[in-house]
Image (cartoon, rainbow, N blue to C red; front, side, top):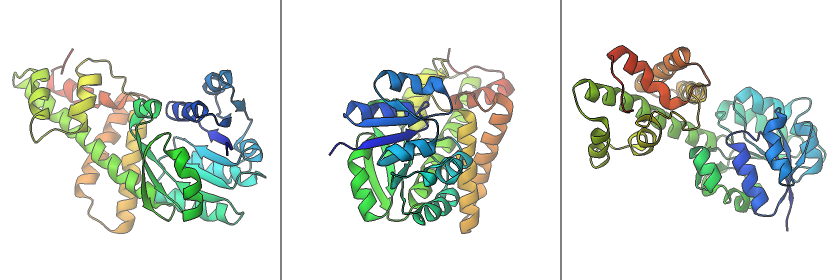
Length: 296
């Protein structure tokens, strides 16, 4: 059965994912606070709505792809949120907001008969466009079974738990590792260039050795060595993600020594570069202090 689906937040990540739902033949209703974000999908036949409540009035399943925890709370359980809708009974949250947002939001939605599937994604804009994201999904068996075929349109689905919040915990763990890899790789590359090494050769050697990681394999060749700095994820959002990890780890009583250092590095980068800078630009903070440029 082809259901009518809703999508709230159709920006850099949400737009391509919503497009994949259209590609699969689904009827789609979209909402974003920016008309220009909805326009490409409307041109392809998606209906547009004035609020998340309007989306939930006219669709069976609603997807979220929103930048901040406050956005998810507002669009889910606010006065014009999904909770006020009359039709949709499943909310799939693809955002990264942390368990401390997801768990209470899911509980509030459940009181009105709306199930929440917590399904944050990893893989960036390229993965969203190609359908190669990692989807870390958690939710009760029945709603999860209903949305899993739809999630497969976005990429590889990992069922990480049966309770909303477990997907978020998995995503925060992944993003802390990703953030740490980019920060420390930037530091290492600046050191190497300062000592006279060729940066491209450094990357080739590292990627053939034990130091390889996602930053050296993709971010340096694509965005940093080329000086394009257009990987598609902002410094502000990365700082948000590592901050959420820190909050969750602290609440759980687990060690924080290294994660605090990573969070500090991204806090400083956001302050220096601005929240809307591409997160691969973090290397500029180190280059300016060392007096070198990596790549170009």
